[in-house]
Length: 151
Image: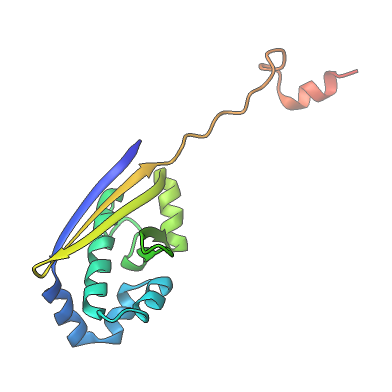
């Protein structure tokens, strides 16, 4: 079941201006460590940063929190797997909030065209935990009493 869907569109030039102005400080404020590793392997720095910025916005929109309610820009992110597929990742704080909200898996797609970056995120609801089953003869007897009543 879908927990939430988020979409973000931004002009790549906006992120380029921020990167030109703040440089590495902007990168450190924006990216999670795993994202910074992947940034080091790309030849198109501004495009990479713009796509990550849009993806983060789409993810927090799908979460329903925005960048508030205990979630920061480095608490969510996107890393590419070995096939190049973007995957949603969370910091420890983001992971804690994800679980609290009942969010399971996440999916994100990114594209760019004519200076625009588009990110779409779909977050799934976490599977419901099944209640522990008790035998019908012991349902109403507290555990301590059950232990005492055994021969």
